[in-house]
Length: 93
Image (cartoon, rainbow, N blue to C red; front, side, top):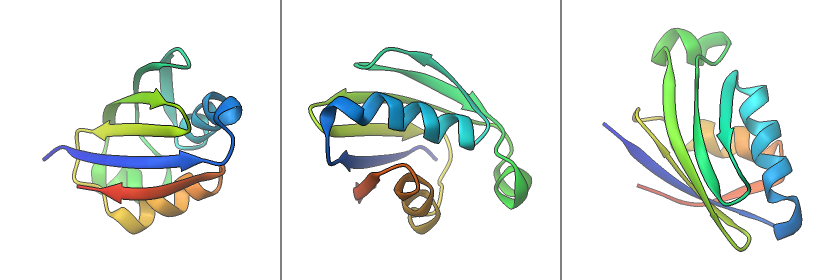
């Protein structure tokens, strides 16, 4: 089941750097630009064991990024991982 997450950055000029850092930290290969793109990979640790390879897309509008993933990932874990890079989760569905 696919899942959508919306995150905000305090400074829109930094959002692409934050997305790149988030992707690299989670073992994802990122392809795209500041406006949007895709990512895929297998995260390390327990997440990799539980979920295997994760693929998705991202789209940036202002200081918000919409992240769509192909797995039903837990909101708390995603929020925690985004927060490490200055991205605050504002919604998920």
